[in-house]
Image 1 (cartoon, one colour):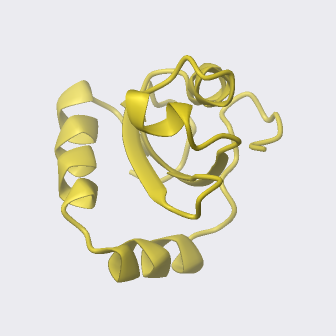
Image 2 (cartoon, one colour):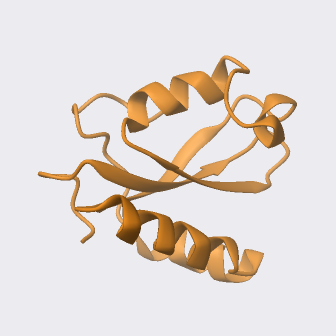
Length: 99
């Protein structure tokens, strides 16, 4: 499932200020992006703000989303770059800006 319609679970990739990637899971992408940028997100992103949402994938179940998160975390940087390049610009479920 790749559309953000009718989904409650999301896997996302952030591009951090140091140009590294962070992959995570959430039920509310807009809230989570704000948490990361406020320094309240994952320990990894705290010193790497601001972060930008570059990839968002929706899933119908937590299990599916977390399995996909694990899969993406195994990707090498080159694979993540290709995934981001091939995807449409991510749109948050509420239609707000992803940056």
